[in-house]
Length: 353
Picture 1 (cartoon, rainbow, N blue to C red):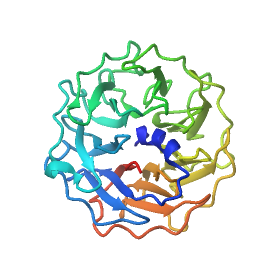
Picture 2 (cartoon, helix red, strand yellow):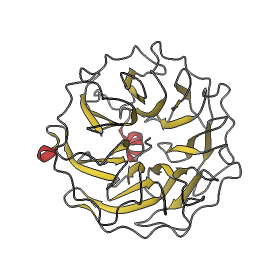
Picture 3 (cartoon, rainbow, N blue to C red):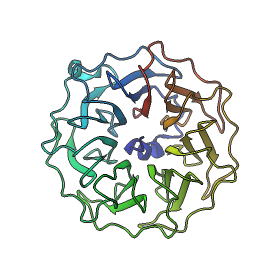
């Protein structure tokens, strides 16, 4: 699910003249829980698995903004696992992970995001306060947990937080969650401020993912229940919800991402075509044509490459990851990786350029 800090980075990274060359990471249901591939207009040979695996089913993945760490939110203790990262060597030191945080999330980690500076990391999780935030340093790893927000995501003890994202300037932190109001946002300054007021028009159902536009002026929520996607103007608080797209996503939406230049918005969902992309300019344009080869199975994660030239979709049936050239519409799907993820993929992220 991953609305992570890479989405903020993409706003600054788009528009360069050189084609993007980096890596693409997907997290999935079974061992090794994360698969990472070199990316240069197609998949390279999969990097070696980390020597120390994440604790369980991978739910979301994020690269740090400068690309020196990669983090996985997952089922089973410690529920957040982070590794040093480099393009030259993959998960470095043959996969030696950072030490676990001294205070771990209460239960399954569903979403993870680095702050735009890379100095903080937040995990959305199941049970308890449903958010854990830590200082982070790529040399030393996790710092001592920040105090929990005074007003956490609403709902009962058993209502999870699912997707999390920092604003591009790092001043706000948004979380999509299961209980009404389905989205909550706090000021952020090395800790949680007082939660902003809820939007006047709430998302229609459970919030699954959240993303700020690259310029930080809009905030999108992928959710259960029609219209499945809700977008609001954002300026230290919610504006009035934008009109729904004329062609809605087909069913429950699980992931959302803006293109690096902010001119398109992608939503992945249950039901064919499983990915819907719209022009964006302070409102939805007419949906782009579907890709000629659709993702197979329910789509749960989506990410644009930092240069905006490619779009990746993580989904529930083989080949589990589908990537397409993107230029105001889908190109022909790239060939599948030679080594596929083993099963259902839930989150996808490109490394920084």
